[in-house]
Image (cartoon, chains in turn blue, yellow):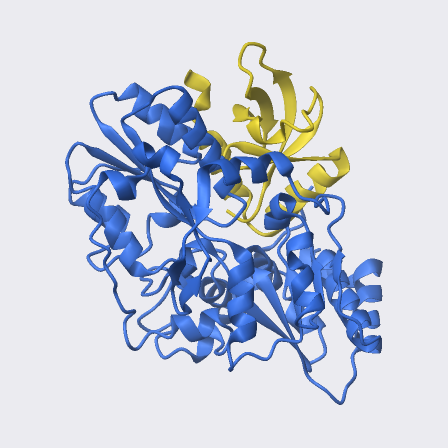
Length: 376
Length: 91
């Protein structure tokens, strides 16, 4: 039996979908944003949209780190690595993201020393093993990866590793949610809150969304039943005229977050006054930079950063898709010029990007569910 | 990057304050425990790992669920690749 059939037939799923149908008012439309790219992936993979009544629309949020990084930052990072003494390191997700003159992988093919690392620890280790070279780590991610970068910078300083630096592109989730709520073309009724980001920041930082904006938010796990249950919780709040922060993912997310991780971030990083997000423009206090005490390990201080600003290809509508104004398939380039094999925008690169998810599961629907088998 | 990899701690490494040997998707890897200082895990505990760092302690049942989710999402191969890629072993 195929997994999707099995989970649809399962009692909990049936109960959750029945409850959703019972709670949803058929005379209105609901627009729920799942903030995290992991949820976007899960929603497409499990075909959850098909289980929801048509008046519940899931809008994909900005929680895909490579998707929100403007092309200029990729160009900046690559420009530092033009120096043959520099080893450019980044997570695998970054490697196929297009810069103006190609992705990191394409630069590697042209002779740049570009290496994939799976952990910032590995970048630091590479520096220790190559004392004559300089290792630059291209750091990306929300609060799930920022604490690790912080800890590695603390270790580099403690151990006096001077041939190592970080090009910091870490962003924070709360200002992005604020920007979405402030955007005049956004009409979001409630949020499915990110799961793993919340293991770090906890649930408290979302309280203003409920209190000041009057929007419910439920921090959710990644299983199909988690996401459906979170939708039930959002509908219950809306029906009762309430707006509060709830934690559906209690088994993993503590309300207070991870204090050691927050402490490491506070030690090493401070907020940038503003930072550019792809498709969303400049958002104030939305990204992290390295504090003065760690300037020696800050690639932006050590290298001349051109500060390149690149506008996205005109025809590509990554911004509108990122904000949830357009569906992936409504972009002019979708599945034509822009495919996972030849991505024009980053949303088509990452498995957390809504275009790649839409392409892989909706666009190829005929094949999608027949290949998922039941795990042991 | 959003999805965490569950790992079981098989050995805390004395003398290496921040590291533990874990079993993650069938391979033994060294991961960094520095972000769990407030609530240090013990041998046999399960943790969720992001980019080589244990980020939270979880129950065994939750760990098994998470492995299932990775498999269902088709992310298990990527998780294996990431875990195999952690290079901390050759210290």
